[in-house]
Image 1 (cartoon, helix red, strand yellow):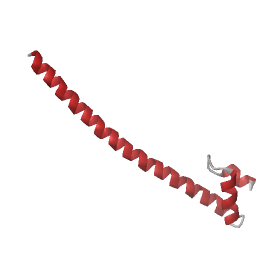
Image 2 (cartoon, rainbow, N blue to C red):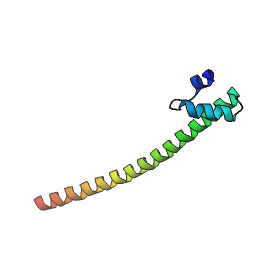
Image 3 (tube, rainbow, N blue to C red):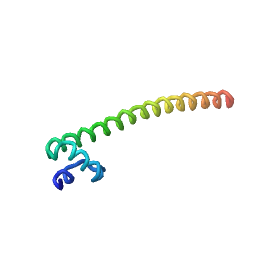
Image 4 (tube, one colour):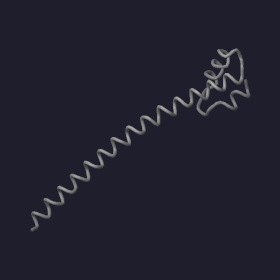
Amino acid sequence: MDEVVKQAPDGMNYEDIELIFNNNNKDVLKTLIELWKIQEKIIKNISESQCRWEGIRDICDSHDNEMQKKINECKKNLID
């Protein structure tokens, strides 16, 4: 069990590792494979969410840039 804990992904608590270890009939290899699959799912979900937020930021930045252009045009027209 100690080897499984040492090789488990960061952030996993001992109780969860032990539960998965027991579910896999104390097979170290199967347990580690399952633990890393769980970690990959978490990373995938984070990266998908992060991509969505980056898209939202790009849209907002584009909107801000267009608004800045309009404001600058209006200022220029007022001065002329």
